[in-house]
Length: 179
Ligand SMILES: [Zn+2]
Image (tube, rainbow, N blue to C red; front, side, top):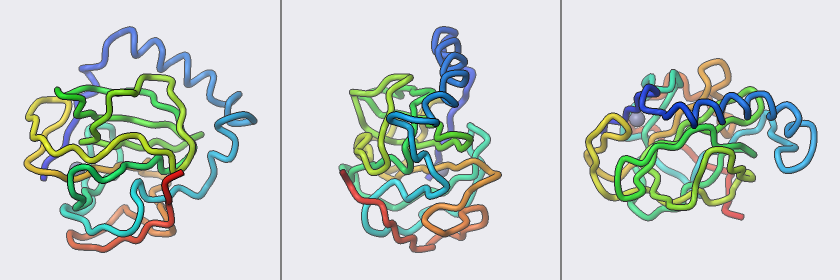
């Protein structure tokens, strides 16, 4: 499976909004919706899944793994987080970057129509579903249904597992649940 995303594709407007959010986030983190953006990130799915590709670096500069998940599987927010970029590779097949306090996540190959920069999610809230189509462009390259999940290299512990050096075929159990 191959996933990639080139940040250079972002529009100037999105960059401006993203910069404004970077300023606003500390305020959000101290209360309101983003409260509890905690040191307890969870897997972006319910149940368990195995890695179809071991840890790799993604186009966002994050440590990432690919999960074997069927098309249509709900993709859940790993933490209380805000969308800082979203790119549509076609048919709402998206590459998404989230920020939760000082931590960043990428979620690629997510099918969702209802997403925009600045949208906030609570941990466990459904962002979309694993996409089944196979776009091949800068925004998302996929040879089949899977979920690419990246985490800040400095804090890649998710559900108690450090994802910085996972091998292909590793089974990961999630404590996340859809809310
Ligand atoms: Zn990947």
